Length: 280
Length: 312
Image (cartoon, rainbow over all chains, first blue to last red; front, side, top):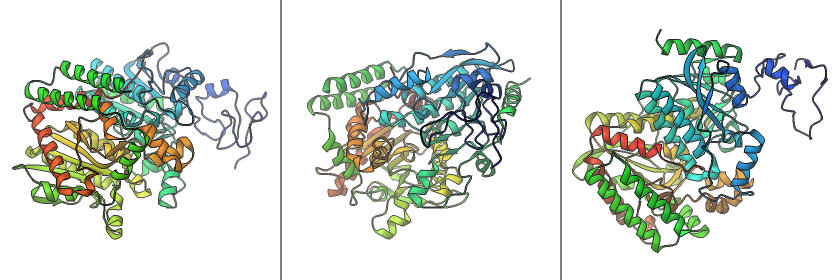
């Protein structure tokens, strides 16, 4: 491992963390530690080794969309608890806690925006809200983003990040897969494009529905995208997995992606694609 | 609880009445059936922990009829079709055409094995992407010739293996759903055992979706759910009780259109009787949507799935 650099002078290293935990601003690849504003300035990419930190949905949007162009939609769509689900804790408690911790209504933010002066709709998922899991609220909001793009005749840029379906909504979570799939079918029927940017990690039911139906599908470097996660695969099948199992680079090699794009190249790429789909 | 269930069904009835796309015979048949289901709900209490676990066990019963057992009893001139025309023939999925009540239909289903050798050969009903690709190829054929499509669902889930992932398991399941959402022909699906997760939902985007009385349909296996949420796979009973994967709850949640009666004690006790009820339900289901035009039918199918879920 290369010697790590401490970019910030104030923080010579990561602050003390409980045993085994890494500070969220410490690079998991090389150990370099950053202040919040340093990460923001580098679009959450490690300046030392190029590792892409996870981006929160709102940070992603303000980084991607033209300044001031984003108008959020469907803020009122929130998770319900149709099964009165209780495991070790009540599902309603988990939702309340996630809302407090993230300041989000659920694991996706949607709305209209401009990217490089081109109108588009955005659907950006946030892994920090219950693992980016897809329940009824996520499915409904994604479908509304499709509706809006279809209605306005603009492309939808979808940026998934999810552990899969939200178990606490049982079968209704599973039904969000066909729900998002039919919404994409309607989007396509209306002649709008779906451009998908896979971010780390994207697994489970989201891969088997909205994430893999893009007209163009690209991924951030190193991002995991697989239907079954590596732990599940090795536990169940006892197969020895290649080191890059499910990673963007191997998915690209296997033909599942159109490109692997470092964050710095993503915005120009999307701008170019939007121009192509918009015509002139 | 019963009043909650009632409210949901009444709400569904209300929505159905307002759907502009469903007209005439189709909607009155569906309304009548829902009203009958509602009456049934009013009379019987919702299944709780033990009843739900009984369904989990019956759904996985080794003597339960599998797809080919139903094919044998319901189809004439059955012609199984093999291979995905790209890589392989996946034995975990059977697909073919045959005669059902006097007309040619396509039938696609998961296939489990009965003895050890066949179970391994069928990979316990867990399909690879090649299997879904074979299914899509047969669906496309059916659509071209106007054959209605029947799907029978019975899988613990799509196979979570290295090759399956490398060959695009997730993407293929997504495209299989999209394909079903695009079909112009009448479609009917039934969960005949385990409706496990994405591997099951790949075949479930139908005009009419049913479950046998003791089938289960769930987002993850009870064991998998217990492992993640309780951190103990042995808590599967609790997980099943919390997820409510039984037919009755799926009906109440608006996920399926009806429940297919099983012989008393379960389908494993009388295959012929189980096949007869299944055949009757599928025939009625296809007839329900037959009178609609292809575009109308497809739009209604999409509208149904678009409306699923409960939000605050």
